Length: 231
Ligand code: DC
Image (cartoon, rainbow, N blue to C red; front, side, top):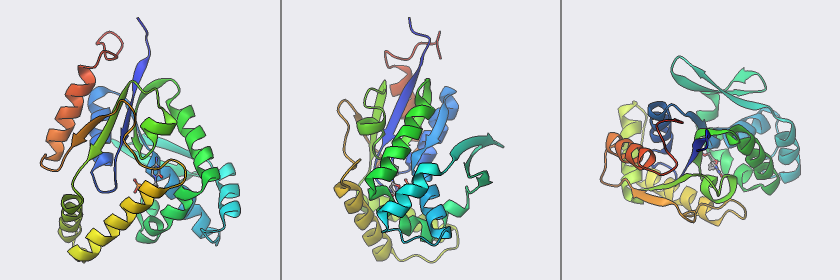
């Protein structure tokens, strides 16, 4: 019997709640959570701060080659450290969110991010979440999940969340932004979002977050790769 803990790959579109689901699942299973979207956000933030045009593929790729990114668990949360600075909040700024698409489209950036992610998960014991984890980063992950939800429902959730946080939101605009990000994720030349071979599709359209976590927890703990003696 192997003493290796499994890799759980979770992919899915924007606004489906992957991050909070993956973080809670990792916590319950005693695995390390890795948010790969945060890594593309780090490159975007650092490129913007350096005054680079995000469409300058060569300059952005060069920056991505030398950038240091790692994650730290602090106070029960995951902190994103880039070049020694805690950028966990800075990478969530709207201008960073808007800038990520050309950065994530850049094949040389992806090559470097995928290599870092493979290094982070090499020993197993991770819940890694993104767009290409089950297809490119860890096609042999023990457990692959594709988390999906109807675009209207994803937009509605985001719209309500913005309102609840006291931020202005217009449903039509939120929906159109989400559709555009879905389109860009789907047509990306490398690492496009698609259901990985062997992935279990979980449609969360009519499930609460805790119901999704519960479902994934059962999928993981009932999977043949999961044995109490190793996990
Ligand atoms: O999930 P997110 O919004 O934090 O992702 C930020 C950007 O990175 C978004 O444009 C999708 C992209 N991304 C990607 O291309 N591949 C991943 N594995 C994760 C995110």
